[in-house]
View 1: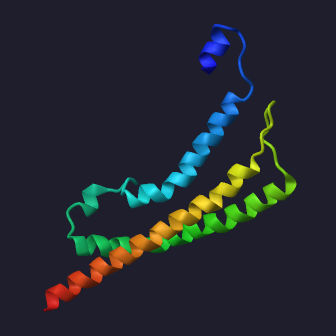
View 2: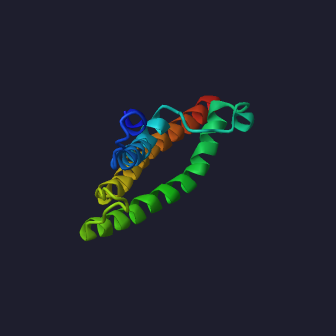
View 3: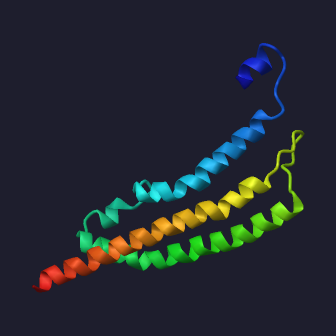
Length: 138
């Protein structure tokens, strides 16, 4: 639509770029937890593809510490940044000047949803690691 308005009618919109950036931001932030659930994140199959499910779960449990540290920091710092932005009524720096604090407040929300999914994955991996171990000893 923007291309038609810009090149055929010579009437570009001032808001389309800002809306596209905000929509992509929401999709990226809110989709991270679902992507973890759907196992859509990038993994190095060359290394873990050869391992048993139990060993893969153990590696995931070890690397989960880094995951929780990073995502926890994102929830905390994103919440502080979003809260400050909302209190200031921060606007996007463009001609249209839409509010940016809405997007900044969605960052800790999306990170929290990712954290919840990470906890669920941690519990599944813990279950796999302990059940396989018990199955071998019996």
